Length: 278
Image (tube, rainbow, N blue to C red; front, side, top):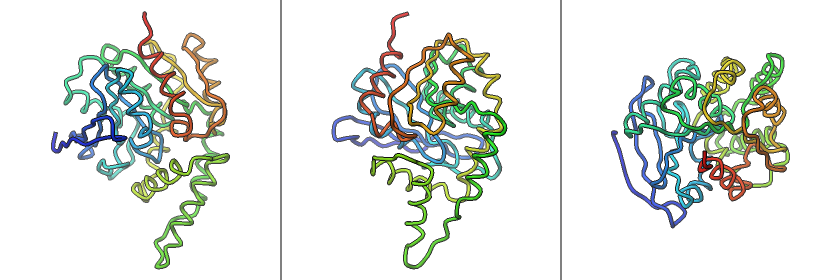
């Protein structure tokens, strides 16, 4: 750990921010709470701040919520070459080792769900439970459509009048139909600015992963969590068909910003599964 500080989250919950070393340099993480550990892996192109509204909610329910900035996002160092999901998972493992966790559960949203699935199969004796929030189980054709949309989106070039910030705002609006939460939108745009031209790394890594094969190998208690307004809601339903033995929960409406849009309901579902008596 190279840096650590204590602060206050939501004026009620203490949290700490630290760094571990990984193959790409420093990887940043944040801890809120002191209970049963849960690793939180974010979507692309975001950061651990996508869970900002639920850290205190989870902590109050007895969860040690450990948010991770995937390399290239948030405050983690940027890879010089395209990583794989396996690379990302190994970086998360460095945090787990530094914290001395003998067992932990893992939750991932979109790209983060890919990382969570990878960790579950990599370390079945370490990962106790898995929560796949919006797993991007897509066909090759569906992936190509998304890649094309991302590639064709306007490139943000700084302008003296700041108009590029409006362009970036409108870019995210275009990828978030039905959005309602302006704070989530603002946070998302800030994270896009942080990721800069390498914001595509997470998407590419997720698209190259064999998520279908990994889902078939997961042996831990697992929940698929989704919401009907998620842009890849269909992919979560597909994952449900492949693994009908997994618990399936869905929230109504929302977007890929569901954590900000329905924080209490989202945290309640996560905690119920997390503390479910076996």
